[in-house]
Amino acid sequence: MNWGKSIAIAFIFFAAFIVVLVSICMKQDVTLVSSTYYQEDLKFQDELNAKDNATHLVQAPEIKVKDGLLLIEYNNLQQVKEGKIFLQRPSDKRLDQQFEIENATENKLQFNTKNLVPGLYKVKFIWQEGERAYQINKTIVV
Image 1: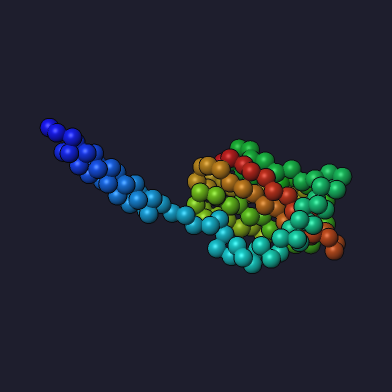
Image 2 (image 1 turned 120 degrees about the horizontal axis):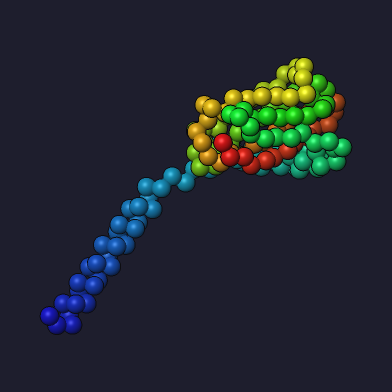
């Protein structure tokens, strides 16, 4: 085999490699975590203020996973006017969930995690006490 044939074969293998690589990259799902990211970005300053308010709390809510339950423990939970809990799965937005908090009677909220696909979730707890908004973010593994 001479040099010309070797170079042609090497070029053919390289071109085939590039074609396979491009086809694999084109099949990857590159969706955003949120489909309404632009509207959420406009509210970013409100989110920063809510996070700052949460850092100044004497006792912040605790978010943890225990025995197949997502537990949120907070002493002032009865004073929460309205609240939401977002469970976001960074790898697949179809697995995201949202829970509303209304008229809590105890200092603890429980949500069943047995129907969730195991893996990493980002928990966003947003609530309002009086006129102030609060937000806590935490990463959990189910």
